[in-house]
Length: 227
Picture (tube, rainbow, N blue to C red):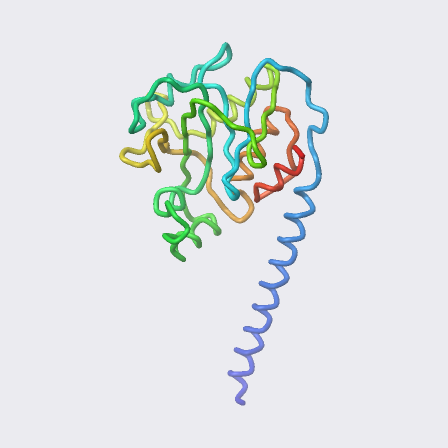
């Protein structure tokens, strides 16, 4: 074995070891920090009802379509959905990687290039919204009641997540949806291994002074605090 080959093998071995150590630290940190609660005793109030909803991977924050604090229909319009149905009482917000959202409607559609861009801070982001007429509580949908003041702070966090045009309006991504009641919008920020869709949702709860994980990248890190 010549010297050059030994150097290549040595570098490769060190690189693989570094990757394994990084993954081990990442997994341990993700698990440990997700179990540390912030805002463990939020203000008790029944002013506003919100929901924390997961599809098993991705977390949405579901809020009233309109109340005294915020009328979302002035920005998230019914006519931007295929159904154009205005008999809705809740709207869900879920932030995420734009490539994942638009190019991967099913897991079978996932491409290595899309995953790499999302993981390594190379893509752009989008906000996915969906209207609901009713919400059903279950193991992956938790009801939370909060004060108007806390909801105002949560609204501000959600609003700040949208990319606005020159006139200060949210930007709907045309002809993109999963079904009849949803739409996509341009959003601020970038997805990465350290800031996922669930990190965004967790931070939304933090902004509203509700129970949340210190840091989480997966949905269970949020729901752990609502068991």
